[in-house]
Amino acid sequence: MNEQWYYFTTNQGLTAVGRPPTGSRPLMQMTMELGTQDRFPFHRSFAAWGVAQRSPGIVIPKRIWLGQDGTVIFRFDEGTQPKLQSAVGAHAGLAAWLILLDKFVDTPTLLAEARQVWSINDLAGALAFITPAFLPRPLLSLAPDNWERVARSLSVHVADGVGQQADQATTVSY
Image (cartoon, rainbow, N blue to C red; front, top):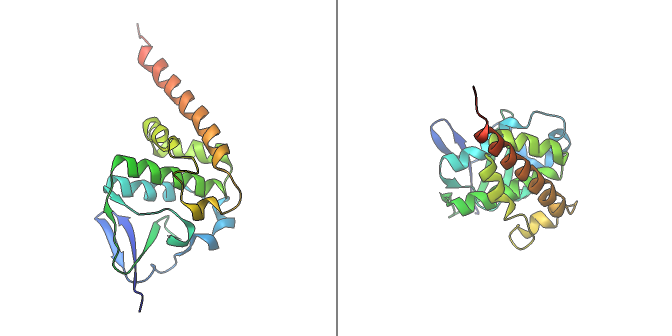
């Protein structure tokens, strides 16, 4: 029997359960709701993986469940579990997360939300991975083909954020 484990972050760290938490649903069953509901809890839950220094693994729809409380839950097959996450892995995962959500949410809205959760440096790091060479194939095959749109929008968003940081750093108060 192919056993599965579902991992998600909590205040105590990483939690593993043998079945998805009550009330959670596969991401692909919630796509219509993603455009209308508050996504900040999902962003924060996904970001918590990096804070916990763990990798959720490949970010593709069939592995992701969403909890009613905004928890992002990843399915791991038997014999696999979250590993330590490198900075490169965190940026690659964030790139895939942004591409995935952009398939169901307006790009400018998504990036404005992301900026409230991730730093400009994190978003710039993710930008380097928003290309078909680095994105998971199952994610690329899911319509629409949005990686280029997200890359262009994110590059402008990052440049604007870097400019704002520079302006704030050179502001002198008298």
